[in-house]
Length: 145
View 1: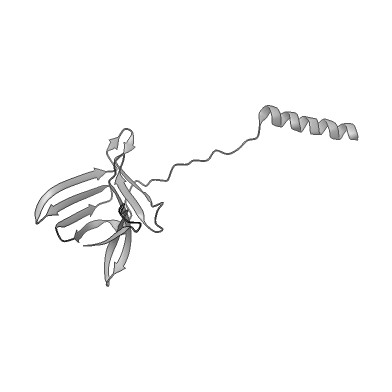
View 2 (view 1 turned 90 degrees about the vertical axis):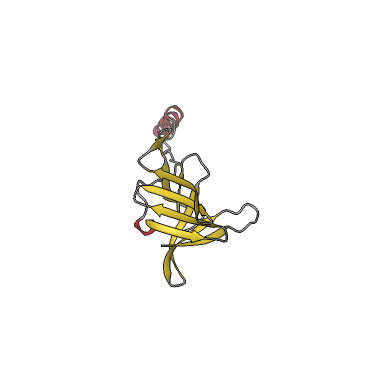
């Protein structure tokens, strides 16, 4: 009886030493989406003292246009259909920073939008959060159609 227990213990120990333990691998990548959520789609506007911003979100594209005193200053268009270094140019994923927000941005750049569909002052809109590096609180803007 003791010899059977000793042999089985030795066999298990040897098997673990030779074969090791099978540990499932963990995928650390964040899930990215191929299309923007329907609640975020549309043409959205935001105005401040000097600048106006137009953000057009479709199923596969994000187009940002910046106006200063009514004159077009800059326009950026990114798409999930285009590739940059093997990655889709526009990434769409759930935000790691804020619950309920979506992160939309351009691969390998600092262009990123943290967006959430909300109702603000009785109107449907998007809440845009961005990190303000001069203070601890993030900057919040509301975009409307």
